Length: 176
Image 1 (cartoon, helix red, strand yellow):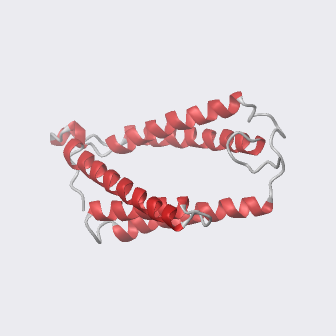
Image 2 (tube, rainbow, N blue to C red):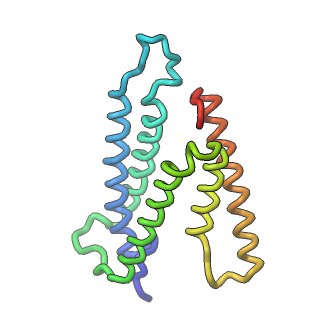
């Protein structure tokens, strides 16, 4: 059986190890920099609206989840030099393409959709498109495609409503 680089394979464990370590560093950096942001207490600003609160919470979540991924991969031997197999050029190209598609979608969401349309609509469109692009399978029958699109639409609506509610009601952030 070939090592496809997926979870549980030698290459997948090694990739999880390094990616998890990167997430730990990123999460820690975001949390630290968020803590250093002004809290605006001198302006009598409500603590839940401090500019560093949301990025700080996200940094902590990234740190914790990256740590879990890192530790799981470390226990599976992802730290061993040469523990993974050689990098397949086609696999590397596929992964790079997926990364740049995700990056383009995120930039398009942040720079193109947010502010141009209501936040809830931008978020729903982004989540629907992201799920559809990354979960699409050519070998699925037409009924499977319809079910996948319906599932993506439901998830997009739920995520959009939840994110909008949390930002506006809990964090008291006015959304574009």
